[in-house]
Length: 104
Image (tube, rainbow, N blue to C red; front, side):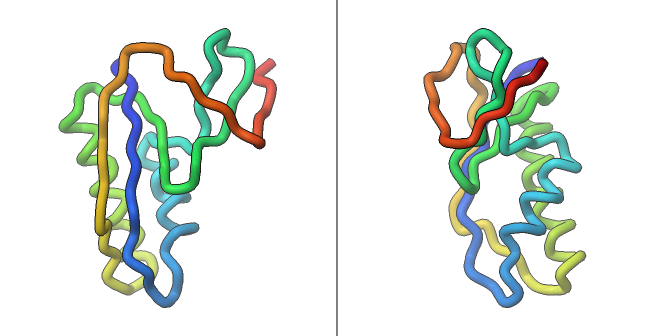
């Protein structure tokens, strides 16, 4: 399946929606972790950046929007993504993180 990166900014709310949003994103197929080139180590992505595999771009965007909607419903407040980007990628990205975890 094609891989996608999502980046988003949430409007500040009370209560803060960031943690709930991240949890809901995982339920919708997004992850804050990404595999390295040799697929032996997971690295965390920068905050408010997610990685996921979806059928196509439409499904990836829908998963991000569903994440927002469910976060809103759970918290009982309006959750606004002030900016967001979903992009498909095929090349092996370069990245680094201070948080990593071996896969095997």
